[in-house]
Image 1 (cartoon, rainbow, N blue to C red):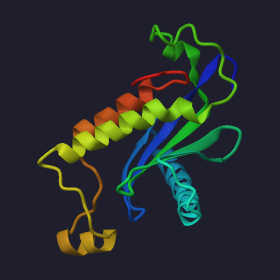
Image 2 (image 1 turned 45 degrees about the vertical axis):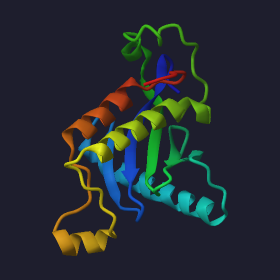
Image 3 (image 1 turned 120 degrees about the vertical axis):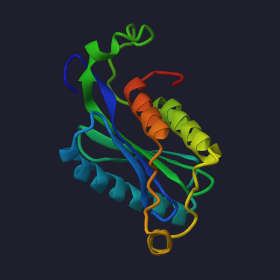
Length: 181
C-alpha cells in the first residue's frame, strides 16, 4: 500500500441469479477499467459456484480472491441468488481524501482488511437493492437473460438513477473501520 493512502472500493457489481450483470459501478468511473473489472467480477462468480456446490455458503462470503497485492474481491449472496461483489483497491485513495470525514480522521494506518470491514458496505448495498425492489415502477427480471432479450427486447440491467447514485455514494463513503454507511 502506498504511504499515506487507505484502501478504497474500486468496483461494486450486482450480479443476477443467472450470473448476468445487473449493475457495475467504478470508483472513480473510468471506462478503460470497465473491462478489467468485468473480468474480475466474472472470475469471482466461479468462486461463488464452488462454494455453492460445496455447501460452504453464508450470506457473507468474505474474501473471494486476492487478484494481486493491489486488488481483492469480496462477496455477499442474497437469499434470492443475487450476488453483490466489491473489489477493493488496496492502494486506494490518498488519506487526505477521507480526512474530510471526522470519523475517519483518527483511524490508524490500515495494513490489511478483515471481512467484517466490508459488512457496512454490503448492508448498504442490500438496503439500496431492497429499496429498488420496493419501487412499484421497477420490475425485477425473473427470467434467464436469454428469455429476457427475446421476450422484451431489453436487458435486465438496473437503470434507476437513484440506485446508481446510491451505489456511487456507498463507494465513496466506505473506508476501513466504518461502522455504518
